[in-house]
Image 1: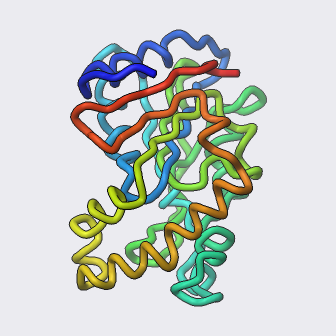
Image 2: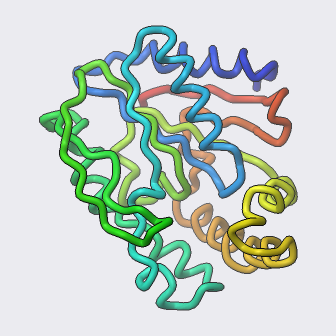
Length: 227
């Protein structure tokens, strides 16, 4: 395991991405639990790659959610609903991952749903350069439905208590109180992650694991990129 500054981590990730040669865009999962830091890491990595001259497509699993009525049909507190009913993996494969894959035409869409407005989106498809890098951040990205669609899998890890600490700030406006943030994480989100770990073993299968408890001084393991 290596450790260092945030900049050193980003340089290492950029070097790992640059070492992979594909005839199609490189599809990178930035996986991890809610409030683990995956979105921030993906945004920072996108900036580093763009500064090095790579075309980057940024997407999030949040733009492939099912409508609210589907997500909460088992109840807002259900971890099973969180794990089973949150995202439209078929749409993610169909409009983004498969078009950018080895048999795709590189005509892709970055989003099908606006979860803030609970509204379906109808974006026009655009064409990616063959050497583009797709960075998708989100939870559950190594589920069986998606496991073989990635060319590189990064897992951003943090302890449960660190997740809740960050969520108290991040989700306060959305959930209304610190008590509700804590309750939602402990009742819905963390148990859903435990189901994911049991089914998909994402840390074991990731090509890169980032230990992100200390954001400014992370640690990381690079295994077999692109395996």
